[in-house]
Image 1 (cartoon, each protein chain N blue to C red):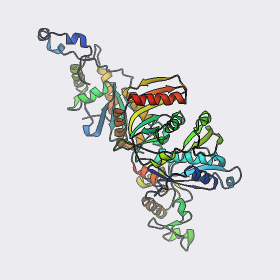
Image 2 (image 1 turned 60 degrees about the horizontal axis):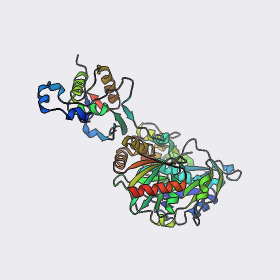
Image 3 (image 1 turned 180 degrees about the vertical axis):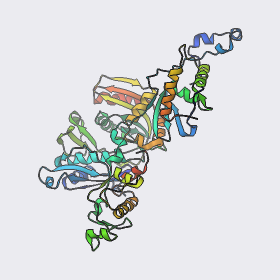
Image 4 (image 1 turned 90 degrees about the vertical axis):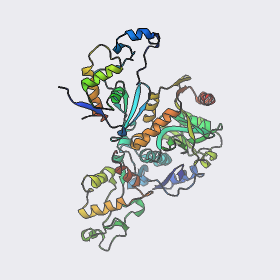
Length: 92
Length: 155
Length: 275
């Protein structure tokens, strides 16, 4: 029951410009500019090298960041759905 | 987006001996990352300021032929010519075709070029003639910039 | 006429608006070809003579634009030019901004139509600054340079009293949708130099009529304000994104509130000195 694995859109399809708390991302295929607030840029970075399912992604983020005490599973799912809708992340 | 400690004070005060004794997973002081809330957005698409700028294709028009050639006809190859001897009836005999009664909108031309629809009020042949005229438009001619924006798949 | 990198050809059902344009644009060169052509047309055949009413008929139009009376034909022509450029231009990233320069470096003053940027630009142009335009900043997507687009400045209502002596002006147009309007041609030197770009060195978001205040802007806020100030950001696609992010990254941006023209001019010059 691992669930789908996600990966970030290929680096060549995106232009990423960190601003401050936000990061601007130009999605070449759609021509749309997105403004990403955390944790979206960090998720994109974590999914850039190899596909991860949601639980593995949560674990990876917990390794690199302090996520606090609450269970982030549902929230992370919401983030992944958002990123998928924008075409910044897809499923393998 | 890198793991810098969020509070410099205590982290920088770590003595090397204390680090060696602590469990491996808590040695690195990680910064906090808020995952947000289920209902909140962290990905926001930038929308243009003017609605008209996304609808520019809908708002632009291509006259056939341009105003400088008002009253002239279009032959089968899309060239602007004088009316033929049969006048409007030339349309029944392979051209030249009388001009349409009004300019076409950008959306109409886009549908004709890419979506398999004919320009409004045309036959198979006059549609073909007008489209050939439009495809020959070049800089400075009326409708050229509209034609260019139709070709951009994002407009 | 040609203004900076854009050529216009304007036809009309009447002589008067063309005569007014000829007078206002007397110092401008003729274009080699016209990027945009449009006509000032009568709304209907019988309205050519009786309560004549002007509509702009060009490549680009807005479905809800109201026609203007013939007496305001010059205003219709100016609005027509703005519209064709705002919707059709792709060679540069367009920002709603006034641009002035000293030497080869420029200040972009970004704001909506008539927000005070035009008046500031005109006043600065009479204090030793080169006028590059008051409606659109044209940013070259490859070089990042601002190209002049010095159209006549349209001053409205209270700003009319600020027209300096000896400027070439259009007729006073009363009762327009924006109130009383008069067009002022830029200084001849600005028109003569309209093929010389300048490098943006400062971006100001001015607000007229507020107590003097100055604040820096965070990168995201600057970026968002710039996207909202652009009429062709989305249409420019990747080139627009690169041009805008480069501008944001390389040029400092501030929000400036000022109570009146003189205070505004003084604040801008002080900012320039501090760069």
